[in-house]
Amino acid sequence: MHRGAAQRDQDHVVSGILCRLGSGLSFSTMGALLKLASMDGMNAPELVFYRSIFSLPVVLFWVLQTENLAALKPNRPLAHVWRSALGLTSMGLTFQALILLPLADATAINFTAPIFATVLSFLILREDVRIHRWAAVVVGFIGVLIVARPGGSSLPAVGVMIALIAALGQAGVTTTLRQIQRSENISAIVFWFAVAGILVGGLLMPVFGHAHPVQAFAFVAAGGLAGGIGQLLMTNSLRAPVSVVSPFDYLQIVGATIYGWLLFSDVPSAHTITGAALIAASGIYTAWREHRRRLKEGPAAVSAV
Image 1 (cartoon, rainbow, N blue to C red):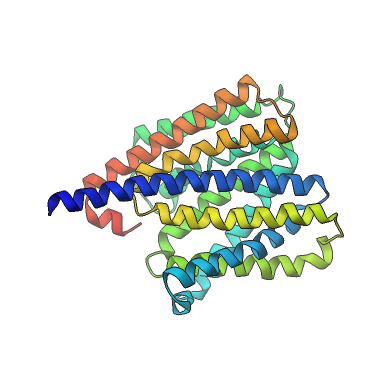
Image 2 (cartoon, rainbow, N blue to C red; image 1 turned 90 degrees about the vertical axis):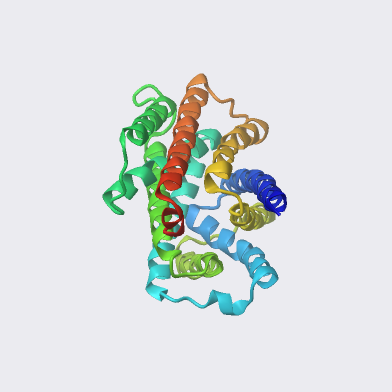
């Protein structure tokens, strides 16, 4: 009996890792496709709108396969409004950073979100953040400085700042999700976020919407589907412990580097590679320390997330 339970746990770990790898590939593909769409003239509000539209069918398919429409009922509607406002702002800034920066650099800076999440968990959730995690935060920000190279980089400063603000917004989303998941079904969270993207994007389209070549819509449609599939795979990966699967997220930087080289002729500099490695190391170490903390605090710590 114990052997059967151990085998199930092992199966969950293997399937979780495979799902996380798939989600990383999906999100890398989404970033490349949306950047291609932006090169055909699509701006960030348009990317948010179309990404939300084309990801919604994937979300609905997932809900109908795993639960039912009753799971979409929000228990705290205002919590969804706040989460969606923060998430859509962050998404728009992330897409704007994709427009302004090489794909690999934008992706690397985007992965400072876990670093900001550590800071916000200390400031907002009053979590006990000790010296090891603060050291990881410092290492991560050193990585950002190496990627950005203030004063000596060809990267536009405004693009770097937008990418950092977007990462801070994503960290805020992470902190918010840790609170609202206590009362809200994850299916409802994902669904209403997609709906919010469509509603807000629809309101912005009379101002920001323009005519584009057919291939631009093909790119953004494929990007939306890739993003929806990425969300689905990432959620399914959570059958395994977060500390086990989250380090595989950093392979997105590798995927973005390959896409940047193949599609945009962006050859990553030594500064980008070194800085990205430090950012990844910081995030992986933070995830490991978080895992250790939860093991010490027991089941209560896990259920509170």
